Image (cartoon, rainbow, N blue to C red; front, side):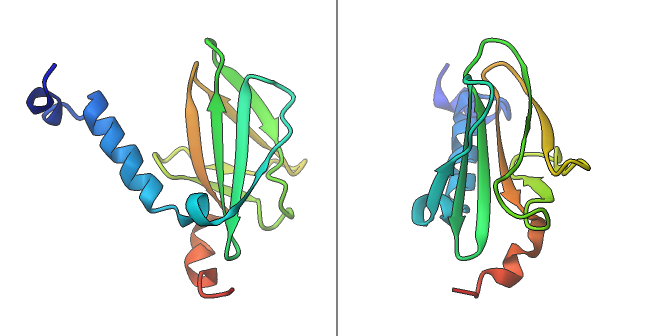
Length: 127
């Protein structure tokens, strides 16, 4: 397929690549922050939390050819990690009573979340 055809298809690889690059540029935690790899019981799941200026982003990737349901804690305090706001969709997550999140990832799927909700805009000025 040529680029002209892909530009008109919202589900094309070209449009997906442009969207993910745009979102990545809007997430300074990835480029500037410290990162922690979260310990997951399923070794086909990569979970990385980036922290910068009191803000956190969590990235989940499923490297398995089958869907996975995972249960995990963000590694932050109960209040700070209570909400995960999806950067790509309306598929947000709220902590369960045990302080963990339960998320289903498609085969080779991924999710990027802002940890703690949208109040990061208010905290951004804190250094």
